[in-house]
Amino acid sequence: MTTHDTTTATDARLLVLHALRLTGFAGADRVATATGLDEATVADTLAAAAADGRAVERAGRISGWMLTEQGRATHAALLADELTRHDARVAVETADAAFLQLNEPFKALCARWQLRPDGSVNDHADPAYDDAVVADLGPVHAQVVAITGRLAQVLARFGRYPRAFAAARDRLVAGDRTAFAKPLSDSYHDAWMELHQDLLSTLGRERSAADGH
Image 1 (cartoon, rainbow, N blue to C red):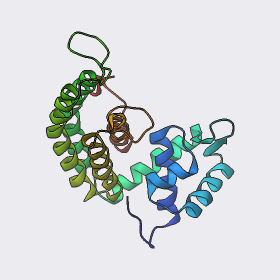
Image 2: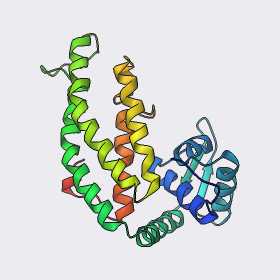
Image 3: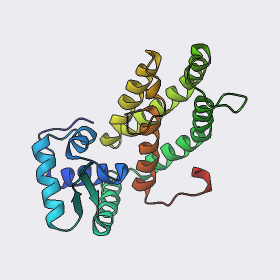
Image 4: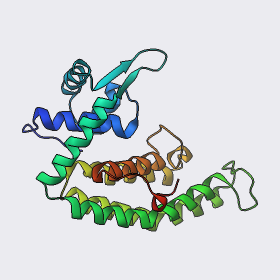
């Protein structure tokens, strides 16, 4: 996601709270990467969110930030306001419907990536098998990049998804097997899950049977 000098404090607050909502728990550096904001702006915004009870920092072996219940409520209100200001509901609903059409095919690809046809665990020792799954990701990739690219024309913050999907797929094609579904590794699956939650949060709707599990 790109940012501009005209980014307001409200914009920064929405982006930072939104990054925490999508990740659940993240360090300031990851928030900066997800939002495109500079580290100083992220630090100031997180400090302000902590001061007004909307975020809390956890220290320990793994340190990071997370939203409080009040922060979740504020985040939802900011997203609703953004949707109205940009008259973006129809565009997001259209993108959401198109994404859901891809969700089951993508989950099937993930299952193939993790398990062989005989039900055994895929140990990735067969390059031909893995390459076939990566090849079959191609049509899904083209569609999700198109969906998010169109949506980014209405809400610019969705512009990070085409780049995230392309970067993960490039790593896969280059032989990085962690780039498909390894959690917390900027994998294709990581980007997919964040996009799914992003669409849900932006529309203010709960997960339904159509969303799968």
